[in-house]
Image (cartoon, each protein chain N blue to C red):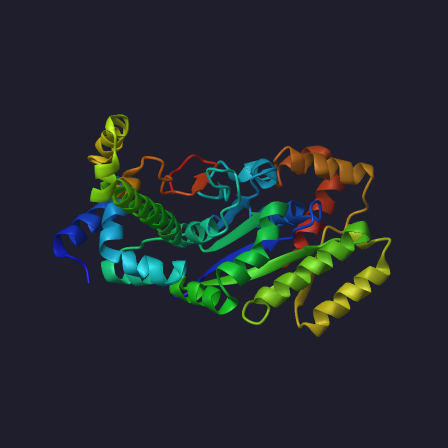
Length: 135
Length: 244
């Protein structure tokens, strides 16, 4: 199911409670499970496949990120379609051309996958202990 | 995920009506099992954090008292965050967990078990973790009675076919409402729900004030000693009457 190297990286990240890169790999390897199964179902299937627990909260976050990713990808393709067609290019006057070039420049280097590397991921432990021990 | 022969137990103490006695019940259970380090108490009340305050006597020991915040970054309740919290708790060595839900969190529980998952899926979740879930619904009498029973029935419809539901009658609130008590017992009997009673103490008395004061200070069984022999004896009776 999963590509070997990415899979090993993902297991390493999960085992060591590392967040950076986790969602990119989960998306790459398990997007179908996350989109098509229930949160619990996806959690069970992915946990079984990787041999390490991947919780429902992670599935929830990943599903939200998948939604953001799809929206950004659609937006990009619409924008490129609108501004990239030859007929529009021909119709542009000098003023518009500058604006067009500016928009296209902004699109350079745009990577929809960036939504997966945002830094506001929740800390892994959801339990705060009164004795200050880690869960 | 279950490691030993005996499945871990998760007790959800719930009621969407505020002031029904959820945290009082949780306190009595905590005092009853004060010396049992395998029992963990979790405050799932983001707004008042009552149990976090009242169960401070457990905070000296490791992983006896904790809290879970179900609010997301927008300060709205993320119902499914509960699932992950339960998964995390299930990985601990502790054997029994008591989760004291606040009123807003309790209100979300029926939706959690009907919209996000149905009770069969929740049962699968229980089996996946190798644990046992039990729902404890607190019911108060008087003006709170109708809301409390409405909520009880919502929970019963949501999980009653698959999980044990225990009705906890807050005895002092029924003192002037014997008919409500009878009706509540009748409803529980029809639905084959177990019934327990707690908190049989005359409200607005010096004795009650002393006990409440001890609870609010977050002191356990030793704290009540300073309130005198009578308060200590009454407290012991209240704790002994708890069957959980």
